Structures are given as structure tokens and as C-alpha cells.
Figure 1 (cartoon, one colour):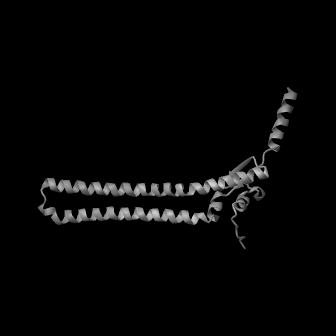
Figure 2 (figure 1 turned 45 degrees about the horizontal axis):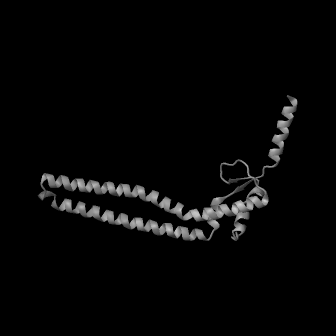
Figure 3 (figure 1 turned 120 degrees about the vertical axis):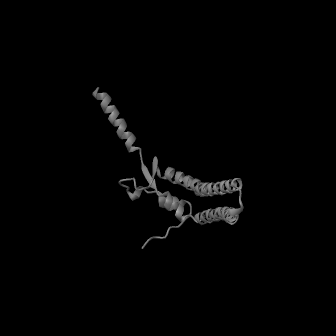
Length: 168
């Protein structure tokens, strides 16, 4: 039994000795990439397109409300009900559009960032293999302690050919 415990302990020590864990700050890497400006521009343009569509919907809504207010006294009960239903329908469309627009912008941002994440991933894999890391965690506020000697962020940036200016 003691022999088995000693074997298990020595195996655990050897496995631990072979593990090298590093970190990377992906958000910092993204912020340093020149391509991020193009991504931001495309997302802003897409947002402007959505804003233009929303403005058209708001204009349609306002014209319906104005028409209803102007002609209300001359409407029959059925016409009044039809116009009210139309206005309520357009209000619903506007609310759905606003909700969906936020999601659509997020999807567009993710779509545009995907090639950058792929580039970072390839560079990270290259650096981690070259330096013998077995695991790399994303650097975040959740980590309690990080030894900066094992942070691969700058090595990945260097591998991608991006120079980071030192803070004074």
C-alpha cells in the first residue's frame, strides 16, 4: 500500500513539473492590432445603416400619427380602429427593431473580430509551443495572482509584428 502511495505521489510530482502555465491579455492584444480600426469603422458604418432604417420607421410612424390626428374626427369607428391598429403595429416594429439592432451590432462586431481572434490564436499557439507552455489562461480580474514572467501577451504581439510603446 505504501509503495502505491509513493508511486502516485511521484507521478503527481512529475506531472506537475511538466506543466507550464502562462497568461495572455487578449483585449490588450486586440487593442494594439492595426486591423482593429477597420473593424471599428465597419461596425460604426453598420450601426449608421441601422440608424437610417430606424429613422425611416420613425418617419413612417410619425406620418401615421399625424394622419390619424388630422383625420380622426372624420373617421368611422372601423377606420379609427384600423388606424390605431396600424400605429400600434408600427410601434411594435420599432421596438423589435431597436432590440434586434443591438444584437445585430454585436453579431457584426463578432463577425469582424473573428479573423483577428484567429490570428491571435495562431500566434499564441506558436509562442506557447516555442516556449514550452502546456496551458495558457486568459488574463482577467478573476485570477488571484499572476507572475508577469509567464504572461505571453507581449510575446504574441512581437510574433505578430506589433510594437508596443512603453508607458512612462
